[in-house]
Image (cartoon, rainbow, N blue to C red; front, side, top):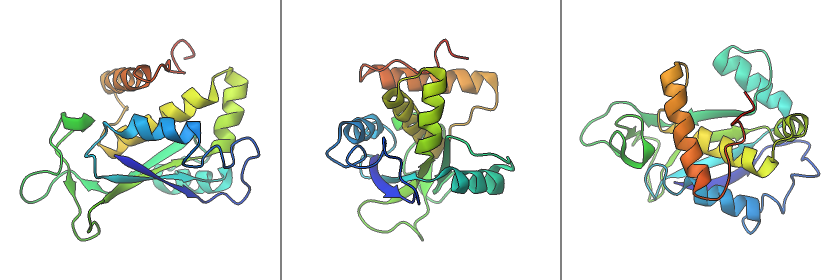
Length: 183
C-alpha cells in the first residue's frame, strides 16, 4: 500500500509541520516503508492530518465518542463482492477477503481508505507518556492501515493478534512498539 499525504489542519503544529511530513523527510519515508506490506502494492491510502476539533467531530459522528482520538480509519474496501477478492484473507495482512468498490475506484492506483491522525494530540500524549513520537506515528499509521484491511480490536484475542502484527512490522524497521509496558 502506498501513502498519500493530505494535510487538513487549520493550525499546523510547529514541531510537526513540513518538511517533517514532506515526502523527502525521514518520518514520511518510514511511514511509506511500513505500509508497503499492507494490502496490494498498487493500492493508495490517504494519510490525513487534522486538528483536534475536526478529529473530535469525526469521532463523535462515526464512533459516538465525544472526544478527540489519535487515529481513525475509513476503509473503502468491502467484505463481499463479485468474483475473486482484490486481496484474500491473511494475504498482505488482510483480516478477511476484501473487494474494491469498483464504482468509486477506477484507475491504476485505487484509493482504499483514509487514515486520519491528529498530530497535535499525538505529540502532546507522547510528551505526557514519554513515548518516542516517531515510533508513535509509525504505530498509528500501521494501526490505521490494519483497520483499512478489516482488523478490529474489540475482543482481547483480536487485540493480541493485531498488537503482534504491529510489533512485527515496527520491529522490521528497528522500532519498539510504543505501548509495550505502558498499558
